[in-house]
Length: 442
Image 1 (cartoon, rainbow, N blue to C red):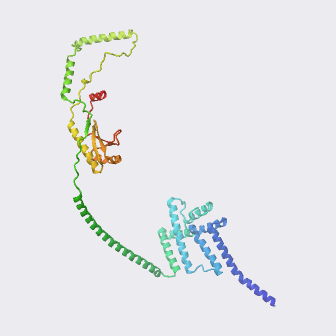
Image 2 (cartoon, rainbow, N blue to C red):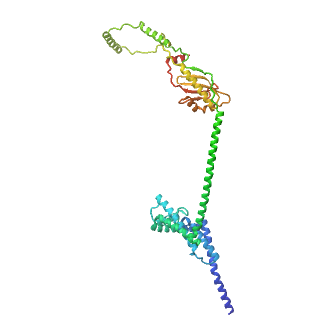
Image 3 (cartoon, rainbow, N blue to C red):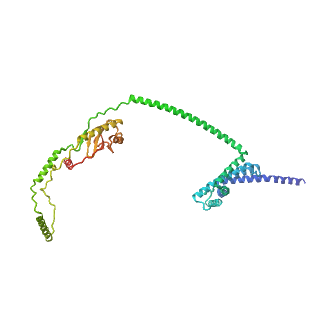
């Protein structure tokens, strides 16, 4: 009898130990599988990832974390936890809202791009999942998975897309109320207090900013008035009229200065040429018109007969040694030009150049001027220490001062320590053949 009692107590002990070990083993197994799923280790890890992605889509990690929490509960409490308590229900509602929002976003993108051939949300989700099974995990966007698809399809059918958003927001609010175990007034009261305090802080900051800005503007106005009055006083004391530039007249070389421009000389040459033409002995009285026509016709016939009978002629270049080039004196001199007005304009431009240089702090002097038919070149000699690049940079200001369309700066002039400024003439002068031939002869 004693042996039978001992065997019965051992059997009862074994029966009481087995359920606790069972929950611990299950809990540890689920925990290990969850870690393998998170790390996607091997075929098992990838398979569980696909399993959770089918239901939760891109939020599959929520399902994995739920399994981890369940395994920890098995190990600690050694029994099934209450999965339908108030806080967990609130958590479920928030998760469903998140999955639905994710699926709404996915479906809008797919329909906008034209990638969804079947407008059914559930069928499209299933097709995307099978496509991911072929390509591998995380290769296709699944949105909120099948749970999100079911929620979105139901809400879309009943309330349209905007209504689905409203239902999702309500689910989030209800979930928060279930988790906090408070009614909506108690939940919104601290939110209202926070918003009110923030509004008061912002209002105070705005008042401070307005007062500071008003003070700064007032101080700025005072400073501006004082600065203006100070500048006016300084300008009255310091600013003096610009000294008149006393320049030595530059040396002007005109392209027509070597020619004795004289109308009387041209008239005399033309009269002599006319007299020579009148008294020329080579001019004889012309025969009658009819006789000349007859003689011309006879000559043409004779020449044609001679050409047909005569052998072909051979030509050769023969230099006429008796030919002499005509004298250059038969060409007229250029007409008298108003050199005085041109020189006055050149002097004025030279003064303008030096004044412009002085206004920009450049010490330079115009010493020579070369006037051409279309362009006048001013030779500018800068003082020691003046950079040529500074003169070149003033090209636009010089053109504005001279009222010239465009100027050209030659910096420096080859063989000279000067800068050439070429300015177009107001009027282009005509160059005669006499001037060209004389320039070649010289």
